[in-house]
Amino acid sequence: MYFLPTTIIFVLLAVMTLINTIKNRVEKKEKHIFTNEILVGLLFLMSGILFPFMYIAHSNLSLNTLNFLWLSTSVILIIEMIIWGTILLKNSIKAKKRPEEVWDYKGFCKEFRAEWTYDFKKDVERKFLHLLPVFVIFIFWTLGMILNTLGLLAPFGLDTYSFAFWLIITIGFAFCVMFQVADLARLTKPYMLPQWAKSWYSKSMKPDELDSYISSAPLVLSFVPFVFAPFPIFAAVALITAGADAAASLVGKKYGKHKFNESSKKTIEGYIAGFSMTFLIVVMITGIYHPFMAVGVNIIVTMAIVASMLFLLIDAFAGNITDNILNPILTGLGMWWIVTAL
Image (cartoon, rainbow, N blue to C red):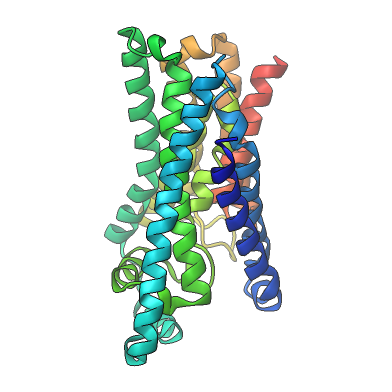
């Protein structure tokens, strides 16, 4: 039962997210963000429900080992929630004593929109932040491989999969909790946030995120189903979501000359960059981590083509649903289906 605190935290965040979205559904629908926010809530709910099964997806762990992994993750998230609760409570008390210092979020949004201009350098920095979870995944997986090769995991009943995913999931979940708690406070009671949060948001947000949740937590949570897939698929999904999306966006904005159509802001050059990067990522990742998914070259190429086509179609026709959710889920399911079907 040591998994319960983590599951409860994520279910609680899911409920709070869905309540806030449904409560403001008229405004959300007018701004075309209602569906996205419902999906964010469902991603938190899915993650909480699936958490008890994640550490045993690829490993036969003893109950004692499982209890330790569940407990360690839960303790870290509980401590994080206590810290957040203390911060929010402290700022709530401060706001009552000095209301003149309360964050005027509506004024902030108005000023932000008026002053915001596209800056390529800042866009690169934002895309780099999306790559940080990917770096974490590869660092922890490599660490797990090294320790397993040295025989340091077996005495604890662990292997590469269980150890690496324990680190990846724990850090990833802590990351999602941090951003969602901050976002729920920002969208409902911004006076509860400290000044450093205001400063962080002003540097990292885009105008279309002012009235909704930022993309960080949904992006990470969209990787969750692929914890149960072979590691090369999980890794490819993460890198496609961050790397291919960044390539498509940055190339399109920097070098794009030919619009996809008259009403589109996206360019053919951006689509080509995203398609090409997706293909290269799938081939590279499945090639490097081939021992964890022993398939032939024909399967690898087919996976790369399917993922690239799905990425292209999502980028071109996703509509009001963010590609930060659709890209990982659909490209990942496409690759996973190829592996199991062929």
